[in-house]
Image (tube, rainbow, N blue to C red; front, side, top):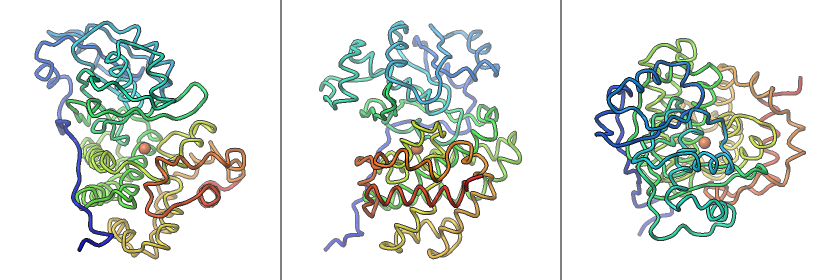
Length: 382
Ligand SMILES: [Fe+2]
């Protein structure tokens, strides 16, 4: 008889991944002459990527390089209206760029029906049975979101509400991991995007939908981050280290793409929308306190995370806090929120779709206590 901890293996991901590849060299082969649009953030102008693409035999039909962090419904509707019809979308950037491309592909699949798109996101009106998004090639230039291997896109309402766009056809067709593109990331972005990956991995383990496959992926992702993140911050041009962090983010994305996220991500959304805290900090600063909370009822599950950290379960929360301090997280957190700020958003920290995935249910009061204690530990009032 199956026990409560015995799960049938489950895993989703149809994306073909090209690891340690050179984006500009491999892209023509993948395009095979198809017309394409480039969607990127302004960062791309700091690289030689645009020049190389424009000189290629199959240059982009159109370039849109104005994606900003945390894309809104309005921004995606505006972009979709500007884009000509092409065969393939190519997204080069962080999670916001890839999510923007997914939103644009979704709109194209419903003939740019902006009202239906809004209703789908805000009122959960189902997509039509015939819905099929056009192919997307995802080229992450940050290492954290995992959006290059998931069918999800986070899109923000103009009022700060957070919505999830999801459809199987939104899995990128190809993901190109070019560590050279990651070397342009500033220190803060390197740090918070990696912490997003850490949160995906940990939330995948203390998740009601965990399986032996997702556990193995997530545990290795945590070990790769533990062993390489500090070194990467010290040596940002080391492509071997960048590749290790890319791999960690990919594995965490594979895992989270199957289980989805849990309580730390639930708490993160109002903290990002109200305080402007980057997603990777917002979804990771609570990890030590959530580990403590979950460990009270399920130390066996927490032991997988503790093994990845190289400590025992009882010491896991302190281990996480000490590591975050060594990485310099507190000084960044203090720029965005202090413990008392949580009082202004209490009542909004539980997103049921995320929180219900946590192995232990936490209500709003518990979420408030976790957020306050986490900030008190990592970003005390100054
Ligand atoms: Fe995340």
